[in-house]
Figure 1: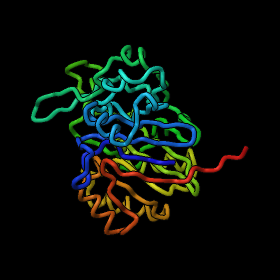
Figure 2: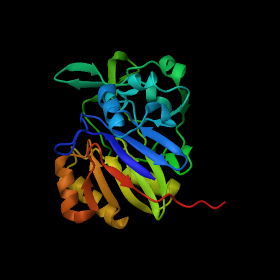
Figure 3: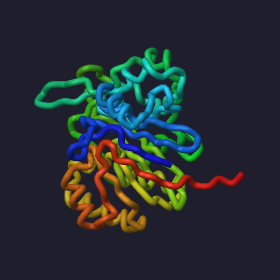
Figure 4: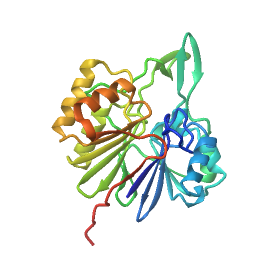
Length: 283
């Protein structure tokens, strides 16, 4: 099982990969390949896929962590090159998303209408955990959020009052992928708006306790000292899985976790390849 970061905010020095504020991962298994999120633009996504030798038409399935533009922006470019493959996401994917900064409100959600996606893809929208390929699952909706969420004060949705009734984005569509690897589970995060600790608790409750790695965006960008101490405490309780962090994790959180766990923590810029042995299945 190979996991490659296709799009991230960062790239390594002198790398031919392009970076942008966004995220995409490619998961390759013996059963096929899944593209998880699409970055902010088709330009960067397609360039980086080409560097990896991946033809979009060869991808077997798409999965979307949530509706924000930095995770869905590459979808329009993909639609011209894929046909009929499934797209896995939460049913709330098509809810409009907005950001308010300095009084100005900007649309930051999925740019495509549902009908446009249905013309090229088979929509698999579910709030329940769903198996995409053997050993590759969505978490489904993360409903129990006892720990802090990965929240931004800027993110809004329309409330019952329409344009005048803005409400904080509930991030109901935020979900993660779970990969069944030999020795335990790999948790592949998009943004963790539901909260990293809430996501890990959900994975342990639904899929099992053994988490061997966490990769992706963990939205600890605005986490305070108490929150980061709690993250370290829980990760120690989990036996300190390997952490491959990028996108919305934040430099302060990355350094804090690296100081706590040393070589168990590594960056995951565009072009990073992670290899895991697939869990053997009984015939």
